[in-house]
Image 1 (cartoon, one colour):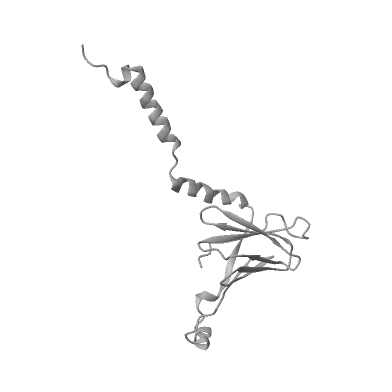
Image 2: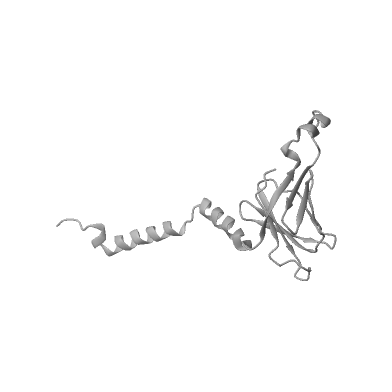
Length: 161
């Protein structure tokens, strides 16, 4: 008598199906990371703030005045028609301020999908300690009671330090 094919043997068939289902449950880490990054699109209604100034871009005149010494911090300014987000990256913190000053929340979103939230005070100031190590973007949401500003807020593009 000849040996049965694996698909004719119920035990072997179920074992093969079990292995196939187990493989399907294992999600590659890069898929998980991409899914987390896409989740940041929940703020799709936030207005994208354009980078208007970056101290690391190197103004020729400023570079000549500074000489070979590098500035101890990096300054970035993002702007929309209604709101400006000023950032200073220091060794131990990322300090920001909204202009005009509005209270609310600031969320630091990392490329891997993780996020950290901090309050924005009445003067429009916020701090993240320590500063992010990798690529990040910032979403600032004014408090619902802030006059003339929607809850969607503003979001910066991706920033690499």
